[in-house]
Image 1 (spheres, rainbow, N blue to C red):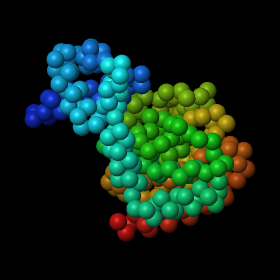
Image 2: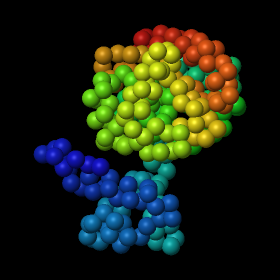
Image 3: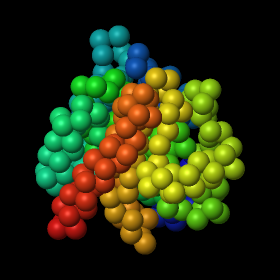
Image 4: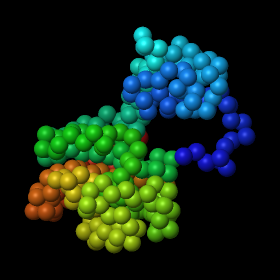
Length: 259
């Protein structure tokens, strides 16, 4: 949701409108006609036509034979560039892949970006089911994932409550914590444990654990490491999981400090 109060005085309207067109097309896998885009964006058909033609020329949307538009391959190129920028040096990826190979668990890095929590790197392990929701990008389930909890725990109580008020606490499963008070208690337990966890709170039949990699005073420099695994393995081997995560986190911290 855009904040009208935060709109810059030098906003370039044509750029803003083009981005709204991209958002509308991206949210419609079946494609949209120019008239449909105009209605969704509340633009005139003439304005929308010029915007769509420009975006098509640049490769950001594609016109299909039936006259509808879908997102173009240039979007994929920008996404790959974003993932590379988030992920950091190749040594980070190498260490994540090594951890995933050694344990069989998928490993994730996360950090604050623009005040939101984002997954910035992923290395999949064969013993963790594929998680389409946990890919590089913003994490809308921060309160339900160990990765998100580890970052939320670095906030003050007031900061955390404002964050949760803005982004909400959707119930992903019956075990998801949906009140700030319950989450505060859970985070405190994680601090005492030396590792934030969740069991079935984001996805039934799955657990996750997370530790800090970098806990900087600057929120944008804070980094966490998480892994996803079967609940039974986390409950029976929590200390082993924590030891392995901390060892990987230490190595990653050294790599990131050299940037």
